[in-house]
Image (cartoon, rainbow, N blue to C red):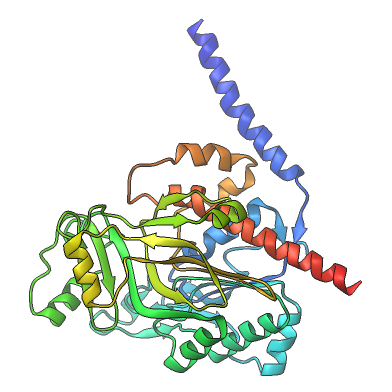
Length: 390
């Protein structure tokens, strides 16, 4: 009896994935013309845009040629080769007329991360040495600003996220981009860490403790969980208990964000975010909440930092613009899982995780439905535009 049960379980474990895989292959393909911009690809994992490619693949979005988008090649930005070698493909050589022509060929632009490549985050940093921080590549350029402007003029779609025009983008390009899109970076970025102990937590940036010592002339003596906020010349550390009632930021969605993008009402967010505010031409559909106590609130107020600030900013009128004020696309997700229809239903249940530092649950519960809905909106606008022209 037990052998029969085990045999049945084994058969189910083999049959269900097979059906799911065949179901995915049976879905129709759909064309979408999207330019992916990612200047922060220090190795061949392509983590900064891999999750976006997962959604493209899972929903069988293809290029105009019918080819699926490849995370390793179908983007603009930095391409690591190895042994200290690389090449770039971007818009720097495009003239304004060429950028206008490019916008005509696109449905959407997705701007993943413009932070760029440095001697400190590139896997081949040993070829530059470790004593001096050297910027190899990065930052939003004027040509990309011009592309955003052309996309807006033509009523097309722009998707962007964390570090779209923060450091190392020049003030001139940042100011122009902020005015164009009516969103404004405060200069502050932050992240939750399950441990602030530099000896224990390998994910704590190596530059953070020495920068803290240089700024405040005292040692980095933090050890428990908390949130670190940084700008050019300031660091704030919010510790659980001392400053925080809840150690991790939460994203809370309003009812329209929940309905339009199929999002949960509340989800914890364990990775990098920026404090970016919006003007009147956009709507805020979701907000970060940092659960500070009285001391934590006083510390934030002393730096002019709000404890509630936008997480999702949208404009869906004459053009479609969606800004995600976090490093949402950076998730440790395997691309192989995109080939199985229905896996989102299983994984969304499986990853109802209470491990706060774990990012897979954020992908399944928040990112996947968000980007799926956003790309569906891009497609809907393309169809409506086609109908109007007929």
